[in-house]
Image (cartoon, rainbow, N blue to C red):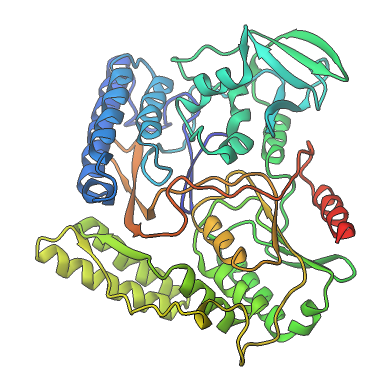
Length: 497
């Protein structure tokens, strides 16, 4: 639920303000302090040695920014006295890199200190912080939180949350994560709010916050607050001729991979059914990224393979992928090929083997990157045409893509695919954004308390710029992000057509 580090296909729970339940965990304030210092130094060096940004000519400020992140992390590490401080220092290091695909995450486990909450769960909608749900006697659900201890919500969220997690410049991060400001993770470097003012039905009230251990009910509310109830991977028909394709993850397990293949096959085999639909809804609620293969294959089934391939080729005509050639990165890509082969994705596995071979050869030559040969892209008018002779019948019915605030990495790749077509409309929240650094691996630190997150490749000439996010055509400000709430907004939009 709360306080996940967000990167491509990786969602790692941060330690809740305390120590990992392990015999090797630090036991004293000095041990925690030394662990924080050592792990930040190690994370800095591993990142410097392996991250594509270190040698990226398009990002000359990366090394100095990484050094600044190290300095800020170490400044807090010098004050660490417990697990909460250890976590906060490492999170400051990660946040200051300003790359959702890099940094360090604390490994999960039992904590000495419980998560605390004030008896309500908050969520960001549009430009306001709202009470999503509350225990008896607390502020009512739907109440706007105006300020706390004299700080407006923007200032409080920036200081207490975004200084240690997420990226405040990405509007989707506000929708997805700003509510965590009202969870106490044991960070000793922030002061939790004491009293807040709320407005509900035009009436303003003040409440003193009673912080106590987070209940199971609070956890459930938090899970539902920014994504709503998630649907399993697959197709459904909530009403006649309106089809709902749920894609809550692009990092599927075996059962979900089977469901994705079945969904794509259904659209391919009965395409006329969807050509005759009133609308298709593609639901990305819950999606943090993973592999872009699933959205690519679904796009091909819906719009036609030749059409998707042609428009995607034109879209990325100037794009290259440079793989950072280091020994550890190369070993990771080789292992990824083996995993893809186990998942029966033979073509992609063979491609990754070729990349691993190229990285190894580049490394032996002392080159910092392996740049795969890129065939010349013909981007003439025909290649940019929406329809050509020989294409399958065009799919022109409305497509609504439900976008959650945490949509990043392969989830953004999906939006790149879907928005190639003019019949696509985004609904929900602004997305998150990516840097140009992708394909992450993780490396456990010697302390056993945390792991470093390292991207392996950099996109050069990608049309979607670093930090660029998608904004929806239809914002859904409903407190409850249910399927029914989205259906209501979609039906209203269909009626206008």
